[in-house]
Image (cartoon, rainbow, N blue to C red; front, side, top):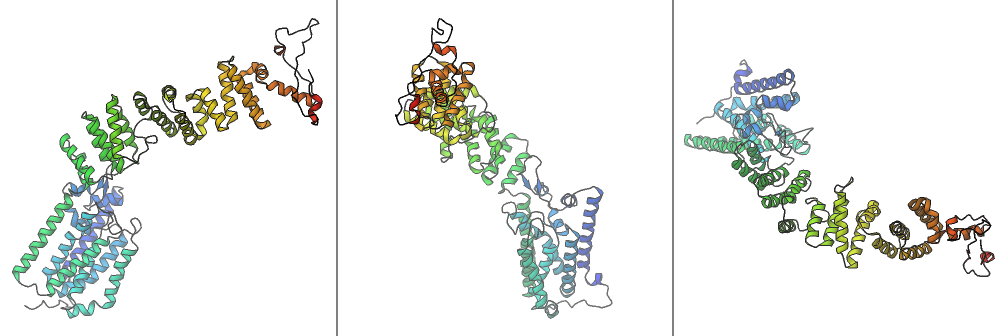
Length: 574
């Protein structure tokens, strides 16, 4: 069998010498003109215009941002596969691809059998988008870009075909010189190196597959694939392969997004539930399918199954806000302590490293109520602290929090447990620590804790606040005098005086006298030779003498070293 002679009549028009190349170029130019018309006439974006003109475009669901994919293909529109190759996203892309296609087409088409040339182009149009469409839903890499269009894959298929045919066609060997080969290899390498999903979205996978496809066809032709039976076998295998790959692209059942899309487009509840379950298994990283599955089970009256589902979804995606909302709803369905304990065991099983005091899956107040009901006061306290720590604004159910905290505190009999709670509050609440300690813990316990911790001013504040409630307590008066004597600096004592004045108002002077503060102020005034003014309330029952003047009170100075400058006022009276 002789090879067809090149059709190189110089007087023959180019479109007659290369009719298939001219036809493809005409289709490509018309397709881009349609895209531009749709874009300007209907004010569409470029992706929308390409989609309207038949290209495969990656779409996003309006409700769920994670639900993305080639929805048109999933609806069965298979013809979009070859049309995608004929479309271009910009004029410069169209010009580059058309020039390269014309260059290779004019070299190859006149020198090979026209049926072989047509077979190669049609095969490339259908086959080259398929690898990317099959893989891009599963892996997002620098080779797999979503919205990619253009004839460049077919151009590289012609290049691969020409490389394989150089040994059989001397004309091709002369035309496809090493310099031309180097140019195409540099273009391929540039696409691999400088690919960018926004600035330069090159479809490198189609380029590589195009070279392999073209070389395979050229190798088959060059090695004598001339037997008609072999040709039929090759055509049949090619058709079956393309059909199977197209079917897989239209129905990627292994893909979690596809199963999710089927669920959203199915009205039958049982079928929808099956597809959502498949979506969670095949794409566990997506949070919405877990949420929808758990919500469906909760609506079906299966709170424990819903709880297990939402926990598993949280394990895969901890940053989904609606998971917390749904987990609260599910937890509130557990009415008995045994059900809630079972739910907690499931949580510990699926999330063994989760700190229950800092988790958001269970409302802190509700978890504290459960611990209080099961006589676990320390856990109840830590749950409340976790709830207060996570509350950026004023927490809800303040009265409930105070009631639970005081009840749990009264149940804490071990002093080490109380110390642990107070230490945890100091570490976790910091700025709001004092405010909540006063609300949640009895003052008498705080007094002991603050004195042992050396926080004397806070101990003083607690004592004064408690004296306001029980003014006759000698124990508190004694504790106050001890704390006052332990305050280290005048600044601290000045703040302590202000606390007394703020707490008792008009009765502040009387309380200063009872606490020993006024006596110290008087001694200080005596040292400075300043007048001392005492209210009549301090003069006892017989406030006035017979002549109407106040009865003097003894304000003896403490024992002072005789060598001290203050010894001059020792024993003086007012």
